Image (cartoon, rainbow, N blue to C red; front, side, top):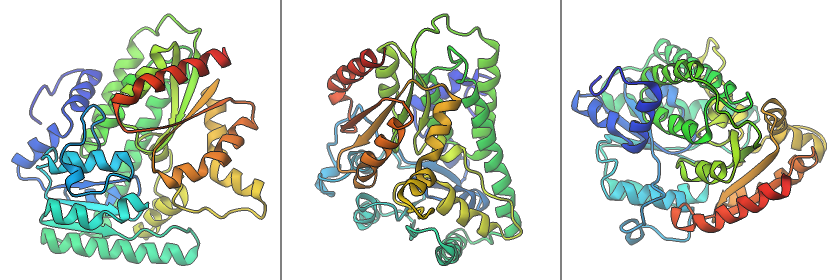
Length: 386
């Protein structure tokens, strides 16, 4: 690895956060194939087993969309707009290919816009189903086989079950290490701030799994050794949403006098809590994780005979996190035009409030230009629960 290999974990996370894709560029120069992907629904285990370096695409909240709107309609998810704009500007010019999973209209209906404008050597649309019954699992396994076949053709190599099983172990270990870091946020005050944690989460998703695990382990060791912040008399906040990947949001919460102690984001708890079962058929374990274990609004978990039982199946993990991390208030941060998360707002808000935890619902752009009004509402919310 080039660069400051022996630098401290938090320092390295900060660098990879600020210079997103830096490590991918280095690996590209070393001859490694780089495959970008969107969404938590992309089975990164298969990319790792293929020997490529996966990198999750992100947007850039502090940059205006200046090129993307020439090719893509503007009335879609602002995160997707920002990520596409960054791609056509060349921010991800190191990619050899990309995987786009079937998740929401903003991703599905723009697949051809992405593929035709980026014109990458490898492109794959992953047709992930929306329901989780037995037939859907079998369908998902077949979709994974098709995915594997396209990668094998592109790379000119065989992706074996043994390689997939090893990749599953590596990613499960990565998730375990990140959960250990999350546990340090249970203390009062937390040993690692929400801003620092956001940098680690973003840095981790830009690295191959072994380097990601090494980074997380380094951060955990570093954080354990330093003294806890003196100010423990703050409200403890949870944030819920999709891909929030900029420190501006945690900063707004913590600068207002609270601690951001846990999340339910698609780059955070959503992806690091559920593991892949290590089964004799590795594709079975992958299919079950991505369909049944990931709590993504676009996947319908129809468990339970009653509405209340279905709510528990969909949102029960939120009450568990609220209890574990002693959360005083939750913030639902939903992007404009995000129908899947938006449709869930009434149900998830009332479900959390039924347990006695106040909820602030924010619908906003993926842009730092709107942060003033966001900060005002967060400050008012914290005063309300003081």
